[in-house]
Image (tube, rainbow, N blue to C red; front, side, top):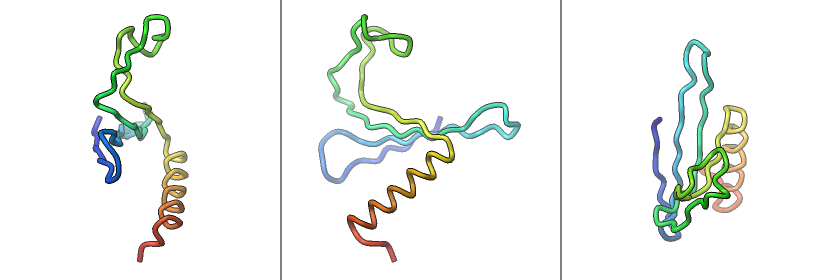
Length: 92
């Protein structure tokens, strides 16, 4: 799965990671885009009682991940553009 790292220009060690999986041409699966906030120095680990079905006990928690389908990603892009324009003015 391809990934790109976006370093913030404002704060510390956190960064944003964008990864994606292409939708197969035969329609036999689903593509998606995942956006993550990552702290490579996170000291947190999942205790055994909280690991559940998705994590292994002792697995390091390094950030939050959101997975988008095409429609959800398009809505996110529109909202980000709106926020960017409101904060910094529209691009020419």
